[in-house]
Length: 254
Image (cartoon, rainbow, N blue to C red; front, side):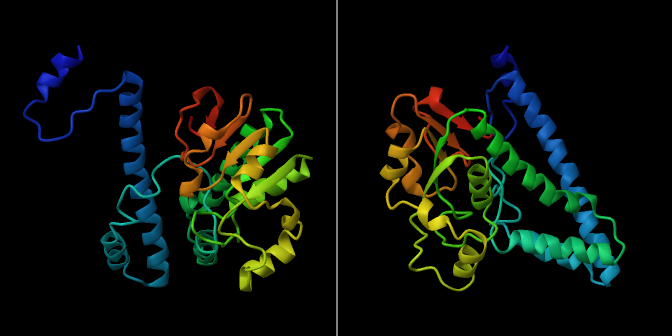
């Protein structure tokens, strides 16, 4: 039993975690898959560097010095797609350069299609509930910014509108009156109808929606699950809300 197995590891200086067999087995597979992914990623970067006559070992040595984002638990929780003005652009630039150099980078090439698939999963999760009134909390690709360029929430919203859903959106960080520069141009060019979808309070979204979608990790969305009325559904794309209403909760990895 678990106690007998635990005794075998009494002398090991490491955390002892008791969990289900299924989770333990999956952790083992995830460990090795991630180790393999790191090897392949480093090798593809090395191939690009070699073609550019750049020392890949120095590049990766500097890369590994970042223990806040690069070598850390950051970005390693299941959730929604990434977006913004940096990640998609830089991945396109890197894979384009690799192609021009005739360097094969299948892992790097798969990043954006996989990210796009995550948006499709979110859309499928919402449409499968067969409700027409949708409230979206958070339009920017991350909390605390007004940058909506290449936000996956914008693409999700556009898809819902295109399918005839009645959508309302709340995001404290986005004020149409304050938008300027690239964000203002993006709204006017890509989503000019956003003004009629935006509301000024979370309560306005909750009053309208049959399905409430949490799109980013703004702290004010954390307790939304407790504000749902009977029969109202919650789709938490980012794993933020407390699951106090489990029967109404749905997440991409729920």
